[in-house]
Image (cartoon, rainbow, N blue to C red; front, side):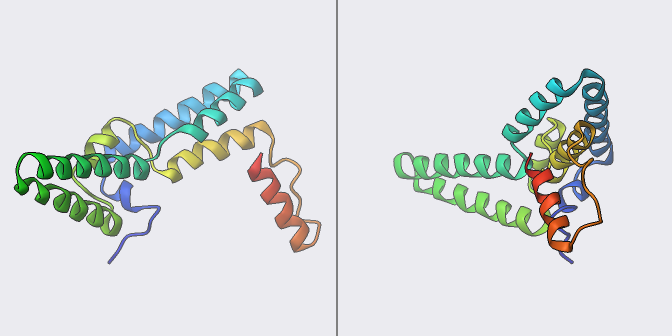
Length: 152
C-alpha cells in the first residue's frame, strides 16, 4: 500500500528524529509566543524561505544526476548509470517516502512541508490571524474569511 503524502516521510524516519523535530518546533513556537508579534512576523518570513525535504531531495537528485551525466560525457560512459540509479531512488521516494539520503537530511532537521505548515499555522493562531473567524455567515463568506486568514 502506498502511504499518504503527509505521512510517508515521517513513517520512514526514526521515531527519535521525528520527536526531535516536533520538540524543536514546539519549543520555537513557545519562545516566539513570548517574544511578541514582531518576532512571529520575522519567523513567518523565514518559514516562507525554508526548504522542505521534497525540495532538498529534488535539488540533491538533480545535482548528482548532472554530475553523473558530466562524468559520463567526459570521463567514462559507465558514469551514465549513476543518473539512472538516482532516478530510481527518486521514484522510490515518490512512491514509498524513502530514499538513501532521507535519513541524513532528516537528522539535519530538514522538515516536511506539513511540519513547516504546523509551525506556520501555530504562529498565525498565536498572532491572532484566526480570531475573527466565525461560523455565522454563509458558507461562501466563511470560506473567504478562512482563505484571507491563511494568506496573511
